[in-house]
Image (cartoon, rainbow, N blue to C red):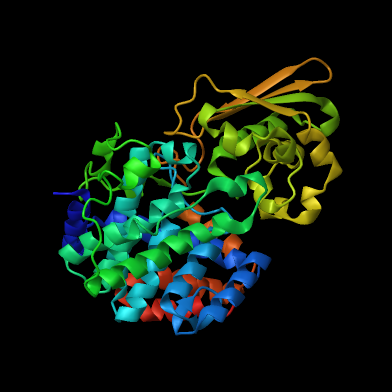
Length: 457
């Protein structure tokens, strides 16, 4: 069997009873986390511009988080993925380095709504998508990033196609075909790293929109290549430059028995996951030693070698980020902020914070070096070494980043994060209503969840 056939068989056969309750519960909390990050983004300039553009493309009745039911299914999926991922505060599967929920859930939400499916069907389709997207991304082991591709958009399209196919009534043969079709739609460039452009925010929503397109074409008999992954010009050959990557067995390892959802990390900080350990190390140093800007002569941050092009270079713009997105992908800025304030929140991404002269002055004194003891990508390690003006050398290391699968945020932690995010745009009563609807989704029609999420923020 091709991988497309294997995945299609898995997606069509999976039942809610075959999924352990602990996995279903964690899945609901991962969705709650992404809904919270999406609510916090409603009203942002890039979200408003995207919603206006989506309206120019057409209208419909599909649910859009915080924006009503005014868009067609594909455009609603695009918007939901965009707002849930737009603050870069959503979950991450470490081995695949992929934000999988923000394509899987937007796809499942609008497809289930269109199909009149039950919330339980939505949940199963979401889990199927997550299990495949994370495994396919893990084959790359960071290699997709190395060639300039963003796995969240590139790989998210494939898992999401399974969710779309299952909910839109495709059989296993059609779902296998849909994966071949979406191969010609998947993508996502990392060029946004050069200047903080908005394009990364589009990636998971575009993956969801592409998945819905591919599934609908396959349902109508459109023909795609059968070897979407392992073919001569399939996913791995094209995007990893290797037709038979060394970790190909990761594509199916434990499928249906070992649940990769349990290896998905929830972000405790609103920045690129690759900065988290360094931020926490900086916060610890400030707390332990009462550091002020005047105390600090030089800061060195030890990071995994593979993350240097993403969060450390080019050095000059990393030290003077122009946008919130620049800041989220900057070791100098995030570490300087954490050392000076003892925290890193969404407020650190506001224009006033980006222009804080004290933060920028300290960021200019932050350098980096390769962490020789890193086990990346298993963990996003980080160590901060501060040299003080009075000659001290202070260091703190975070060998396992907070939120990692073996140092996870609890469901209570996710609840607290959700409330903090939702409170930025909705009142406490509505936030509680949304929370209840998400955590109880498998007991009600999917359209009921869509109605609640779509209420205007």
